[in-house]
Image (cartoon, rainbow, N blue to C red):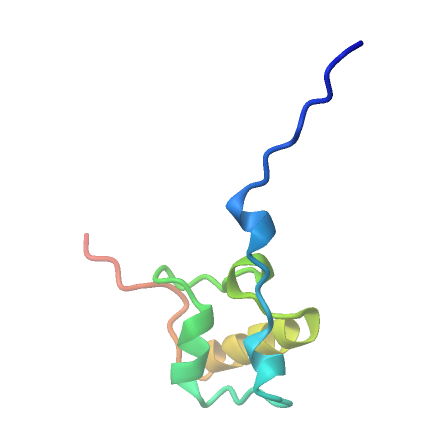
Length: 84
């Protein structure tokens, strides 16, 4: 008989992120609140994906829309300042 191979669990399986915005009962995300939006943007200016930010689907869509509005209004940069 073949032995059963036990699958090793990774650290990611044990760590379950909860949506910070759901926990704080946030309904609207204001595009003018740049400090809050910067938490969901990388240093290069990319929007963090759901698996990294820990947002639920509803709040991730709202955060992404607010970041795009803030970029359009020149409150957030599209990309970082590149010194060549």
